[in-house]
Image: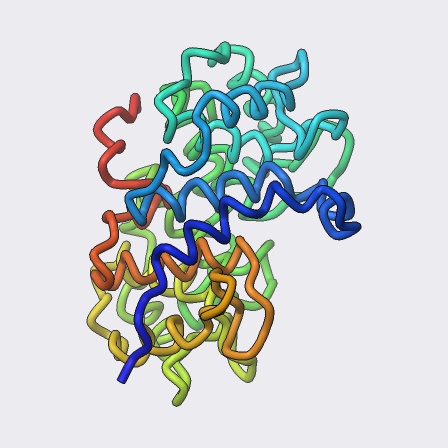
Length: 314
């Protein structure tokens, strides 16, 4: 029998995260702060408790991380980066507060990161790291802002297609092994571009459903341990493909619920480990996709609440 979903404990756990400023770990995790706000806010929203975090405080924090070039850093004083810019836009979209930023300036920052020749996208203005995560982040960000027409979608789709492997999956870059996280970013980007016709849906669905282990949990690639976060990366990909019924939903639910901290709240990567907001968010998002625990529905492409998707500008 599956454990009870500890809704109130999870709400209190997320609320407590900003009250640990006397701990070294708080200051060593500055680079995760914007992501942490998004993960916590999303988990709360799916539990019907978005107001457990003060709306104005959240908005003020996000805007304090923006740079003049439109990009956002992980925390005030951190350099602008595409991933944190996406988190910022997602947070403001959830809070119905996109009007506090200049969409044109943010879009200019995002589009400046795309290589017009290859379609690849960098994470920031100074580095040369490119991979499929950044293509997805750029496309989702611009889609929310209603600026996707300023991005070379066709070139980006060509690049994603070059990252497809013989097993139907996708890697970080062309030639890299298939990985569930990258498969999600590629599928979601293709969904935003309306190009899921490029996907071998049956072959990829088999690869994804084979990620479920006897414990009920999912791993990200063969011969790896199961991890609660893949309850999102694998499950959302199957949802995009219309194949959620290709795994044992009840066993996955039990795996996620077993990873809860029954004293302090939060969800860990697996049973017995320490809870964190990242796995709490993706565990709850996975449960939402499964249709359990009376959670708000989550959109599998954007990882945003379905209730706000009608505001999408694209």
